[in-house]
Length: 237
Ligand code: FES
Image (cartoon, rainbow, N blue to C red; front, side, top):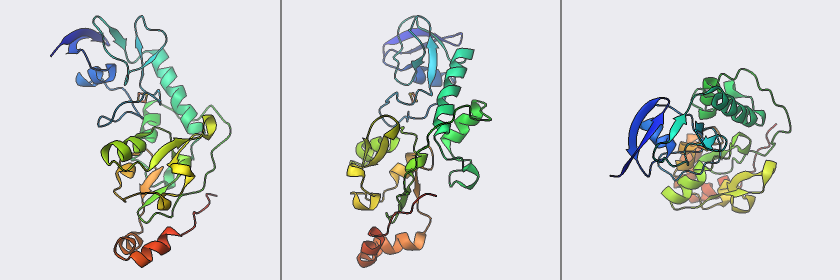
């Protein structure tokens, strides 16, 4: 295996030449927070939580997609890096429901953990908030687009891992969402109820329905399934 020499936070290491900075850092136990990155799927570099400083590079770089190179010097925990990460998380939280205590993913939410790790106690930014209806017509899964952080992990899990291709990005800018095609409800898509999207979602944007009787009947009684499919979406207050 071809190796290159790099320095991460003062530690000199040899790493595979096709590694990313994130992989190299995690390989020696240096933790860098991530949100859109998942080790089983191709990295996209979209959330910018994993920012680090690479000496000589222009600005901070997303470590999950930045390749290592011979002689590279990486700093993962400078004041500039910490400030930039914190601002990225605060911007996500500014457009995120503040219902952690009653949320199904409370204490099991990656966004919540990153916010705590960044030392965020209050959110500096205020602005428009998303207000999408809850997508609750699928017998197995509930989708809350207001809790989506647009990491795209569900898209990659559904298409790459499962080959089902239910989800896609839609719209642009502030109105960007992750949704089944044509903004359909999840009950109208080709969902197979595998649950991989809920499993990989870092927040409660996609969760398993806890109404197990309804799920059981939907899966085993086709007539009942039709009724469940036509259930109206519930509007978020
Ligand atoms: Fe690297 Fe999201 S984890 S950009």
